[in-house]
Image 1 (cartoon, rainbow, N blue to C red):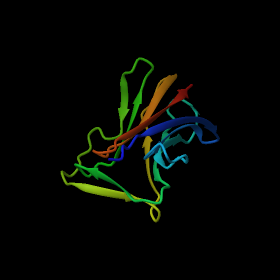
Image 2 (cartoon, rainbow, N blue to C red):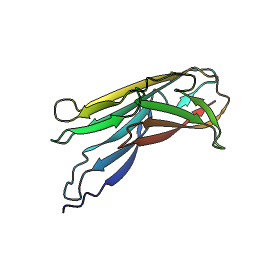
Image 3 (cartoon, rainbow, N blue to C red):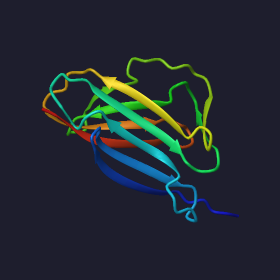
Image 4 (cartoon, one colour):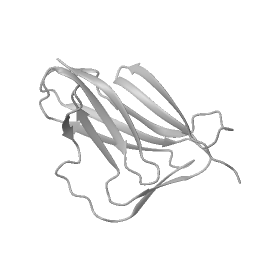
Length: 151
């Protein structure tokens, strides 16, 4: 029986699009390349009060094998913004309804990435905020968070 071990490596990268935290997974310890995972960016690192925040989360699979992600509803992702105390300030899915249907997304050699984007237009006060992007697959849920500043 072959044991599958998930190895996760995190990298923090400062880019012109903001702070990017990437989480990668390998399907086994034998693989040395970063094969599938989640990454997130914001359009900026620092925002003015009242300025919209554009968030993008990317789910990727650069392996030679298809990976199937299964869902209990039509919702595939979510974004959450929390203040420094951990209070939820904004959630993309709040007040949205999702169909109660089973679904599947397959990533692999032909379709390597899925990208989801949302915009927060809430007027955040001057502070630091944690922005979390979540991929809501029931069998392989992944999330990533970054910190932004509003001045």
